[in-house]
Amino acid sequence: MNEDFTQAAVKVFKALSDPTRYEIVKMLVCDEELGCCDFDCVFEKSKPAMSHHYRVLENAGLVGCRKEGLRVYYHLEKDRLERFLPKFFEIHCGGTFRKGTTAPGNRVNR
Image 1 (cartoon, one colour):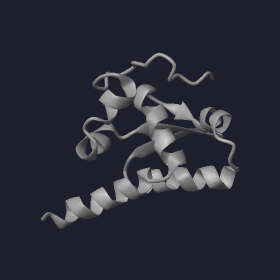
Image 2 (cartoon, helix red, strand yellow; image 1 turned 45 degrees about the horizontal axis):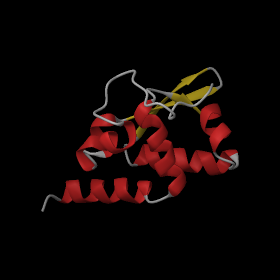
Image 3 (cartoon, one colour; image 1 turned 90 degrees about the vertical axis):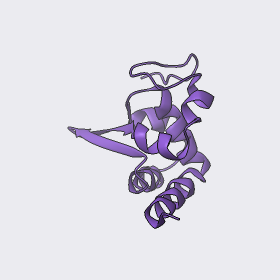
């Protein structure tokens, strides 16, 4: 068995085992990029708690971020997710990932 694949898979599945992190990934499946304020509107958690969730997802290689001034924007690392959960896009977004597409009802108001 490929040890690198196994260790990476464990990291990914551990990251997704938390309901908040799973929902963050679900939100990013159908939106190309979301900012912290988008997540703050959905999750009633403290900023330190949300930072922890973002960090776990980043360490698992599931999300990446960019900073613009004081704002931080997150995007999904699609290849990483597809490697371990190839049906995730189909299940949560109604098909394969297409850049810029959004499933009805999954978009966050900004």
